[in-house]
Structure formats: C-alpha cells, structure tokens
Figure: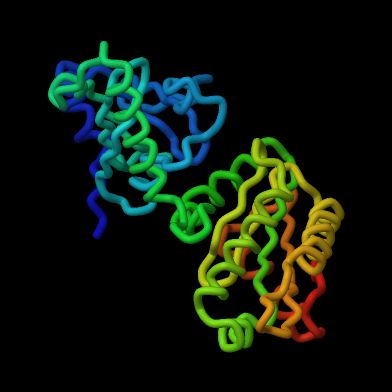
Length: 296
C-alpha cells in the first residue's frame, strides 16, 4: 500500500517538524544527496547523507532506501558521539519522483543512557549495530541478504551511470547442492554454504564490492568500477579456489564446485532486475554446459 505524502503537504508542516527534531532534511536515497527545499522546489546540494554519521561509505542498513522501496514510513536507531538518534524516514512525492524526509531526534535521555558510563555506551552502540545488522545480514553466512541486494544494487547502478563507470555482478551457486545435502546431510550442507560464502567474501575488495546470499546456495557478487574482462578473471579465480579449497567430508565422495554467470553494464540503463536476470541466465547456461565454468 502506497503511504507516501505529497511535497505540498510537507511544506505545511516543515517549520513544525524543525521544532520537534534536531535534524530535518530531505535526501535522494538513490544518489545519497541531501536536498534543499525552497519555494515548493527541490534543489540538489553537494552534501552526502551518510557523512552526517561520519561514514566514508553508504550505510549498510539504509533507512531511506527501505522507505523508498516500501513507500511507507520506516524507523531506525543510530549512534553518534555518545548519543542515540531515532531516525524517521518518510517517503515524499515530488515532481521529480520520490524523495525521503528524514527526521532525526536525540533519544539518549529518554532511553535512560548514561553517556559518562563508557562501558554502557559501548554496549548500547554494539546493540544498535547488531540490531541494524539483523535487517540486512544473513544469519547463516554473515553475508548480506536478499533485502540488502534489493536496496543496494539499484544505488550502485545509479552511481555507475552517473560516474560513467562499469558495474558487474556475478551470480553463483554450488553445483549439485541437492546431492551434497543428500550425501552429507543438511548440517554439513549448511557448513558448505558458509564455507562457499567465506571464499567469495575473501576474494573481493571489501571497500568497494560486496557479496550477498541470494537464497539457498545461490550468491550475488557486486563489483563496482569493474569491466566484464576483470569480472571474468575474478570469477575464474574464485572458481579455481572453490575447486581447490573446499575439502570433502570424510564420509562423502562428491566433488564440490561452483558455476558462475556474469552481467556487466556500462553507460547503459539496466535495472537491478535486468542485471540479475542476465547474470542468472548465464549461470543457467553454465549449468547446461557441464557446471564448474564461468559464462559471461
């Protein structure tokens, strides 16, 4: 259900919001830009939304992206400089599309937090971090989950277009995973999924790229500023490492390998669904051609 509000409605209440909240701002969740609202119009600024939290990169659990996709109000806790903030993200309809109103309120004292107690403050910060991780992390592998893919991949696509840099994704899964489960059991099967994910994560640039568990034994790797040839080389390196390092259970005789499908976009408009469909089709071809190969 669409629960957005119109920009004109926002104008009526903006001054009131500023009396209630420490920070009132409008952001474009897809570009991460902070926007100015003047005389019924919105203008882009050079401000980046996540810099407020003293971050050098996008927030993992982006509250504005969640509000953007759900078209509903979303809440989140954040911690900064010994203070706890409640963020309310409200989707706003404008002539330029959907933007997000972010309302930041200091709730430190209402939560009975003693900021002079360093141990308690550290525990609160860890609790908030763990709580935010639960939204976007897969509990088995510790990697990002499908929700993170849905929220983050569209942002990376837009950044790719704006910066005119290539973006590649790799879809991969474990070959004959059902047979592995049948042969070794589900506990060992889960162990193999976890090991597979660890190899994927150790094979990318964590400051630029990310990997998520798409579902079951299937994973998605996102490689920013990476052309098709480089993505192919990375996938080949991972494929060989999996073939070499994923040891067999002493009770099993199944060779554990992985197949890979790649999609690269550069200066062309592809949606997240387009990219995933292309990569998944290439993964299917890899399976048809005998598995344990990379198709691009």
